Image (cartoon, rainbow, N blue to C red; front, side, top):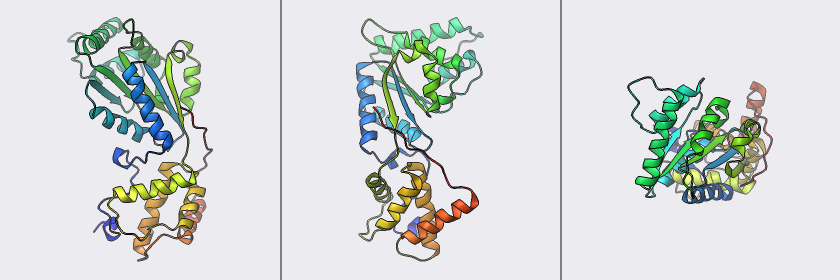
Length: 287
């Protein structure tokens, strides 16, 4: 039997996989998602969401896809790893992502651009669809790929952009974009995700337990344990999930009823001694 069933849960509550069902939507996450949808509706073009490792950017991308799937009039696609050594390979991968039939002959860069331009005009003008492209791990984009995306953002009518582009990346993406003034000037929405507060950390833990099927009134984590988790993780969602997962596993092994401060302190000390303790610096949230 899986450990979580022994605790009255239907499924794993603290997986680090980017399941949108387990995205705790704090105020900043709700605001970011709402602002992105508004940008799409207005067809403004380029949006950038930055955040340190473990702030939930990939899960937010999956949640965004889920929200778009519930709305009519959107054609959306997501690139999970944009690492390509040449502009040609990037365009080739982009055509595959957009499910555009590849030409029989080896295309030139001009061919790629013409194909994509025709696709965007057909979808945006003839079919009246809003085309959204979400690029995860956008800090891995090289200058050539960013230039390719800049060209696509040039395709527009007198009123709107034909491609709605979202870049989700770590903070180093900012310095890369700042070195490309022709691209940075096109950014319509800029958001930076910050770690959770103590109250948000508590709400995230409770939310994930409820989503996993926990219905008992007896808390699985004491208030003191939650405070210790927050202090140790600095409010980074991925780290919170990892610590909580380890704590629940220990709880089952010890036949305990709830995670207390002492257990969390033991786990933290073990991570410190084995060299796995994280070092984080909180960011300032903007959107």
